[in-house]
Image (cartoon, rainbow, N blue to C red; front, side, top):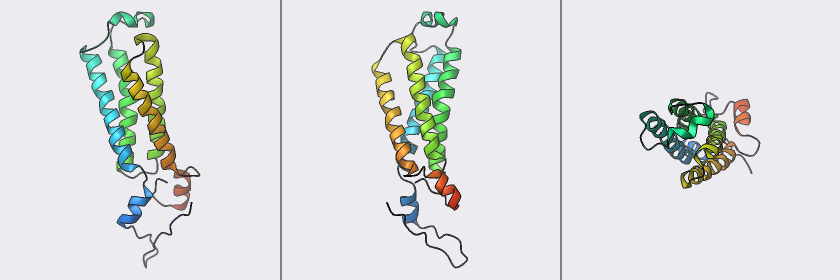
Length: 162
């Protein structure tokens, strides 16, 4: 795949055009939308666990020695809401760190789901979020570009995601 030449202004700085921005950030809108929704879902789930709304019985936590959903709510917030929100924010800001953040958020979401299954059993919601985790991992990898993307962009001093 050939890279496009970056237009240079008279002062030697790269000239940023709307077309260059659109082509330099593949999957940006997808990342912003999906990671925002996953982050909001993680936040809503954390609030539900803290409030005790639509939660499984606390008895499923007894093997862990827990008597409330507070620790689980914190875990959900830190492992899903924060990383997904960060990935969405980085993509919105067109940061070169957005694709690695998407990969991290996807891995943490998959880990969260794998931790849930022994305690809560399998559900369709876990299947849906598992598909989202896998899909976003693919998107994050593609957004990095052929040679890792973000490292190449940092070495060349260009703010691009692929």
